[in-house]
Length: 173
Image (cartoon, rainbow, N blue to C red; front, side, top):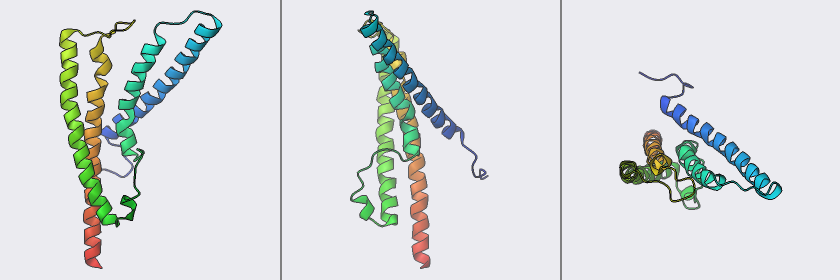
């Protein structure tokens, strides 16, 4: 059964939610840094929490939006050689690199999940002022790589379809 054109998939909704949460985190970081500056330089009462919270916000926003950026093809590319390839070869190269990237992401999911579980089981806490439990802070890393894994598989599939279509088109000429 084919989906109607324009209807978003559940996975796309998850990626979009990650993008929205990232935007909210950026807004929070801006407010927190301004708050810290005011407290430190105008009221001479620096906070203890802003730096640590902002550090973890940066980690979370990176992994919340990485798969969305990949979906939008927004990552920085070094394409000086790739642009010289014909569209068919470019699509095939994209399939190959997307599959390799998916496997790398899956490796990070595997090992990242083991690290998160170990930190959770041992009750590891941050060695900083807030002494926050570390597992909830780093769980986004394997989760983000899992979303990237799925998006790389989706990307390789769409490029494979494009490659096959170009093969049929070239045969008809």
